[in-house]
Image (spheres, rainbow, N blue to C red):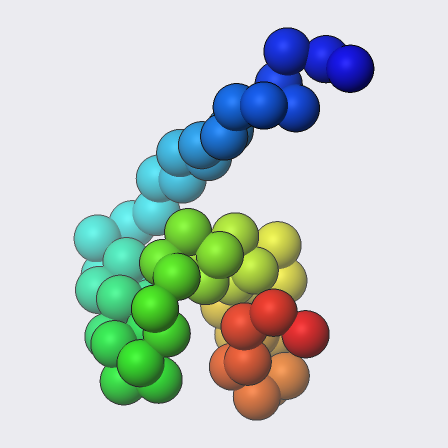
Length: 59
């Protein structure tokens, strides 16, 4: 087992302030409780594709 198995790994994402506000507003509007999971999924797809998918986190 690696050392990281027992530790949480955090991801730092830097986005433009306008896009960050849009993503934050979207997360608040959808009442998504897990910001890290929300950002991770949004960034992996790209925000426009994420919204096309229906904006659902985790599945």
